[in-house]
Length: 501
Image (tube, rainbow, N blue to C red; front, side):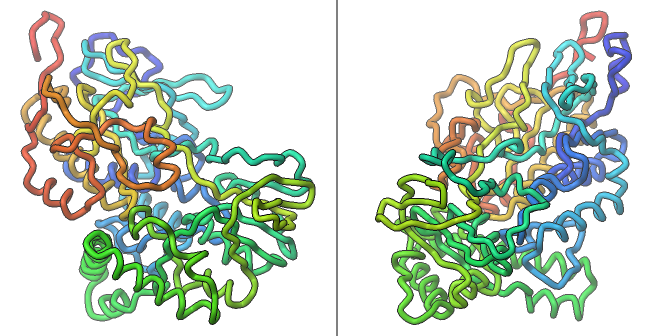
């Protein structure tokens, strides 16, 4: 920020070269990648919460865990050393906190800093970011670059559909996004509405001490069972150094996930049979698998839900969990009346009904006073917006591990910053020109929360570099061989005499 010293920075502004929004997996990874490739740059992380962790600090419901292999969810640069390959949320947050401390990243975090606006000033080629928590005095941070690592959903409220008569219910209604830590559910009758990753994670944990747990689903979801601990990881650690073992196991997990999705695309019927065979092995004889665990869509058209050690199936077999596939007619005082005529008694109802998509953490973005509607912009290589200077947005995969693309985004940002500073550029932005482009959804999955929220996301096209993919292998190849100046405009801020610096 040494170039901006002409009196236009206000006394209450704090300056850094890079402002990172969010101290979760994406934000910590961005800090590491950017600072390692550009050691001369300064950075500040603005985190709206009181602790490191992001999603893994927000979600505190019973049983919360990773819904993909922890080896691909973990950082590429810091080994996951615990034995389990599917990790609970508390251990993930501990890992993030320890990693941030090890690399000194935690010294750059400003907590309780809710980013409300980011305003680009072309006269200085800087962003001015305003943070304000409820009732607090606004604070301002100025930086050359802004990296939004604030996720893709609304932290303040999850999605709850219209539930007729819910106000008549005498029991407790909870959304997992805001789980009360003092809730005593032991011996209670619980209905969990939903069949996605949150529901199948939560239900086995609730069943450990609840009187009965019912999973009420409108339609089934594909479940993928696997071992909670990885034998290959244990073997690799036995004979290799932690860093080498981690690289090998992580690559195996990442490419294994990609291969599974590829197989489902080319031969969905074979994958369906495999999934059904696993279910029939773990569920009681005669269980109606077709009704309760055979969706109408193909595998990986929506994200597959992970059930380590078949824990959900085990809870069903033990009689602690019941699956009901039906639709809600209305609530009454004692529970839920279904359209089939059945009634589910409940003391607690959990609405595991999804998330609400939100771009850039809900912050208002403007360029030279003109507000930017991200929905009108095309996304460039999945991490920048057309004609918006020096702004990165980290958006992980929907079917694969979040961290895989988050790391590619961080590395791409670090690479662009190094290119710019080596040549004296102070701004860069992707520009698509006047060529018409076909628009396609940014996330090509049929999950309900995505279909409801596509309007909240930037546009994607069908041709690179304006295509947003859910394919780690293709994106990795693109990162290795892409031209950094492709469809990019570079420039320098004007100096006080009107010339370009």
